[in-house]
Length: 142
Image 1 (tube, helix red, strand yellow):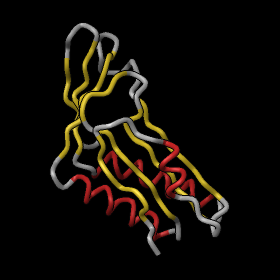
Image 2 (tube, rainbow, N blue to C red; image 1 turned 30 degrees about the vertical axis):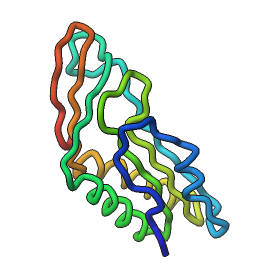
Image 3 (cartoon, one colour; image 1 turned 90 degrees about the horizontal axis):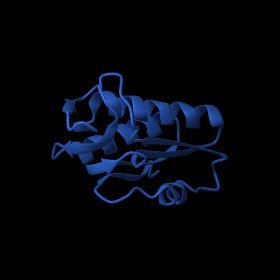
């Protein structure tokens, strides 16, 4: 089975509907999604956050595919996942995940496993930009 339907890094705006279409499958009755958006605040920021700049290692897309495959294979689920790179504004989607499986519990578990593993294992770094011009790099696990 083709567990991973989408696993890519994108400079363009992420298309949530394309991720949902990618996991459509008559065998599955449950679909979960996760959308991680850029917010205007951070506990470490002294002023309002106005954007994020994501950069990645050349192997990041292969790592994202592995993360999706491992999570999907463990639960007989199909996965579509993308992570933005480049400059993002507040409100932009930085991560989109769609998961389809036979039952809701597995779909939720796979979706959560993917985002948690992205946060710890995906070689993507973000530079946070604040309203006053302050910037801070956040690395893997951040």
